[in-house]
Length: 231
Ligand SMILES: [Zn+2]
Image 1: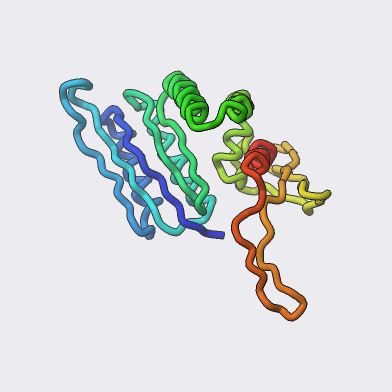
Image 2: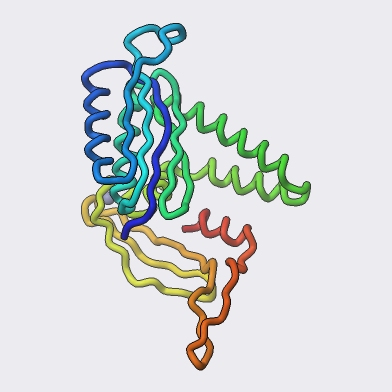
């Protein structure tokens, strides 16, 4: 299944054959999409000195979920060569996301700084009674084990333990607005359960086959948030 995919961001890396190889491989992955700028240029000499490349990535167009996550994984390969953590913005089928590229320590630092900024943003925007709930949601996400975050970031189509693409999903079993599906990875033997929450009702017809307007999703935002948490 394909959708509109976007990966954009700028990372400053050491200029070496390894980083040029990643640039080339990214260009190959982006080939055939609408826009495929992977531009390495010299960064300002002042702050970082010479030997540093500023790689501007701007890839978007129609892609499958696995192709989109392959592009993001390739961008992450710049990590060990990064001068500082770089923030990348992604989108797939209007689901927006972001990730950081850098060494483990750089990424951890950038992620906690980013989480704090998001909390401050939320608290600023929300009424006081909503702020506590928003804080809870962000804290829950921050406490999420890394495999779960990897799974969500991959649009849940690769094994979060061994990155195999052979994950097999069993039948969906529903009870009210919640549904479950068993998932198994034949390559590493891990198994888990995907949890789904109903978020909308669409394509409604009356008894004569006439379309009934559905409007936007009637679910309150917290419900949808719950889906993200539980999926
Ligand atoms: Zn696996």
